[in-house]
Length: 216
Image (cartoon, one colour):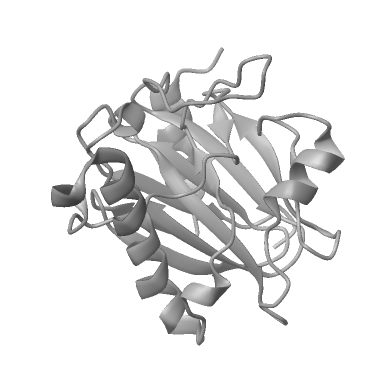
C-alpha cells in the first residue's frame, strides 16, 4: 500500500488548487464536472461538514435521504454516489483511506449546542454559522442548509436505529476523494465543535486539493 505521505506529496505536485483550511473555519469552491476534491485530515480526528449545490440551479442540492436510499447503506464510503434532491448523481467518492463517514448526524449549531451541552455553550461558533457565512457568497441563506455530509466523523448506528458521535478513527493524513459528476458548489465547515469527541475535543486544520481529470 502506498504511504499516505507519498500519496499526498504526489497529489500536491499535480493539484490545480491546494489550500489549508484553518481550524473552525469555512471554505467553498466551484468544483467542475470531472474534477476531484481531496480532503485531507491533516492532524487526525477532525470532522469535516460538507454541502453540495448544483451551480446551474442551487435549488438542486445534496440529499442525505436520497443518497442513503440509493446506496442501501447507512454509511458513506468508497463508491458512494452523492445524490441530489432531484435524484441525480452530483459526485462520487472515488478514494477513501479512512473508511468512516457520516451523513445522518447533521451539523452543530448554537441552538443545538445549548440544548445538548448547556446554555453557556450557545455562543460558541458552530458549523451552521460557518455554512451561513459561506453560502452568502452565492446568494444563499440559512434556509438553503440541508442535512449534510460529515467526512471522518464516527457515528455508529445500533440495531435499534440509535446513534451517537464517538471518537473518530481518522489518522493524520487520512483522506477522501470526491469526484464531481456535475458542476457543483462544494461548501465545507471545518467543524469547530469542542463539546463532543467528533474532533477529539481539539479542532485542527485540514487540507483540500483539487485535481483536473487526465484529459484536461
